[in-house]
Length: 284
Image (cartoon, rainbow, N blue to C red):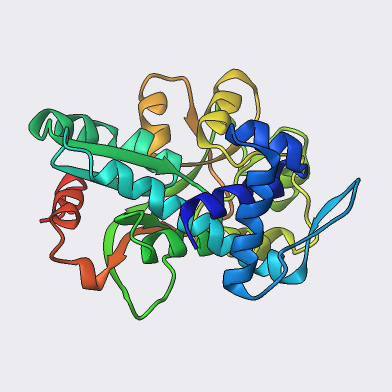
């Protein structure tokens, strides 16, 4: 098995056509076919069902593709890591709001202090299992999570606690009640645990928000430009509260704070990139 075989398989899986996959890879169609046949021979499994019109993954192919994607990611990151222009390549992941509102200045200061350390920060890639796999594979050195996966190979360190408050661009004299969450001017976003579970305890499992996003910057913009109200971490809301662009609202409910953690592979604790990443986050 070599990386060209992996690339051929993933190209066909994405494009679903051998001819177009060959064009994408800048090789002949026969070469694509030969590489996939060689991969299937190595694995002892048929990965693709193909006829004149359709290309479909077999059950074995469906099971193998996630591993193929991980192998390709590891290979691509290894090429970057071995570049001579930098001493280290540090990759960290976490919520976009954390990078934007909490650690952006840390990263900029870190780059000035360590010009030969290349830093790549990823704002939410996918779900928890993706973050776990990226850390386990050594692609991501540090992952910031509201809900760090419990894993025997991970070390978890507490970073900080976020107070979650209700805000609006218009002041309100009355308390926000449960019924207000069903009004059209409520904007919803799922902040980190335990906020989602707490909120469902108020509105119920069948509740559908009138307007919902999963992006903190979009949520902030909607609140600043509209007359709606919604929850924001105090670290995001406070600068706008101080300038009168947002107002903190009174409510019958107090949202629980969200706690953020950084996780990394315990076996890699002596890796200089871990030490550098923790220093960038202000952990000595």
